[in-house]
Length: 618
Image 1 (cartoon, rainbow, N blue to C red):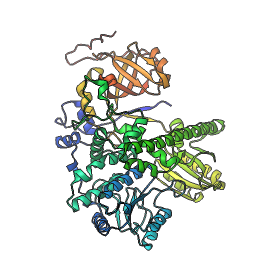
Image 2: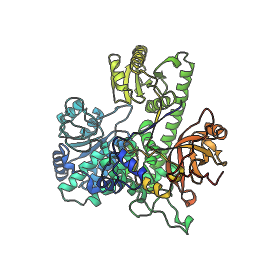
Image 3: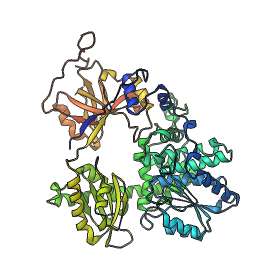
Image 4: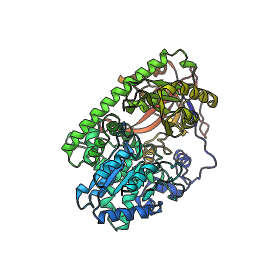
């Protein structure tokens, strides 16, 4: 399906003093940055710009209870979800607390089993705490809806501090303290912290209360916060952008053993100065320290390389293995854990590839699939841990609301679990809720949800869900690409690319700027690579510029169109490619539009009336 390109509109006048380059000024203004002071803060994040953690509701109670537990040498259990946010949260709080424990055996952690416990605070986890004589549980990345479980813990003499970032539904659980910036009665300014970020704020507040050195006790944990922010897809603005900025800086210069070993499996290796004797190691952006790895690690690496490997532990085997990896201080032990987790990830890839192929085959064999507004597929043999990935892949393929079902992992063949994914501007949670009378359980948000159903209700649910989608999805959804600005090739300079790098870390609400350039042409050396990639060399006839290199991942099918068309349009990210340590500007092409007929561009005239000269490559 062709993607619709939508140029972001700017409302109002961009302040003239925002930035000397009008393209940079426009990008800042699109992000809500309207003053020189705000731009200065954006380009130079500072940890002192973070909010006082005691602005968070119940933080004083949480710190008081934690301090009492440490002074009285109580046993503490750190509990967290099995995804990357929960895993990093458990590792962060565990590493923080172990410095203050009189007896290290009094500190433990628990990660629920995806298939036995399901999501959230579980009775089995509380029973584990009871058996180990725990009197304080710190519950991370979940707990805001665990009223019954918190009450059960309280009845058994266990106090709970909840550190969550999800929306509460109804009454707040009766925990000793509930830290959640999304509480209606919480005035904390940053509402988009990750679960790990809330745990970090608890550690930060404890240090402030007890006049402890933040540089020694909290700053070394910022890499875990950055990993959680990237993997949990929370907005990378405000506090999250500051935490990501410094966390990535730490990860690039002093990675912990577990992260170093896992990244090696992603072919991101330590920098070896002996291989580049005449060139010093490049510096990590913003701190002047040499990079540890052979290139700078970005949020994209956390999302696509590190995060999925850590997630695979909970999908395939046991999430606690990922925590053990992150808290490991010995490189040899970390290597053994990383090997296991990489094996989990390989198994996860095989499982989701097989399930995706089978799902596509089921859809292709269904004669009515093409006329439906939604996609629902079910197979009992699919692994419960990967159906969310399969749902995402099917949504990418057909671009319509999708639910993938399989049987539960507890052996009950009559109970199905489902994972749902949606498309732009369609609330799949509302669609599922409209069919809620046919379900056992469901939960989620606008674009993703989970549900449980009895097998005998699946057909009725599928019909009701399809009917709701048809009635409420008025037009056929179309993939959109939001473009920030249009550039002429002659405007692409090293100075522009350098400033664009300072917009990072990228993520939701602070995306990597996407540009459009029209009437570009093949300079003659473009070629198709393995794995369906394209290596391009492009020039723009209407611009006075030399050709630029481009890379187009998974777009090999466009090669013949490139060769056939005299000119076409591209949208792309600008990046610095440092292949063989020789930096040059590269266009990372996201999409291409080809005209039905080759069209000559209109001449572009400058203010002095002279027409742009043709580039030297013609």
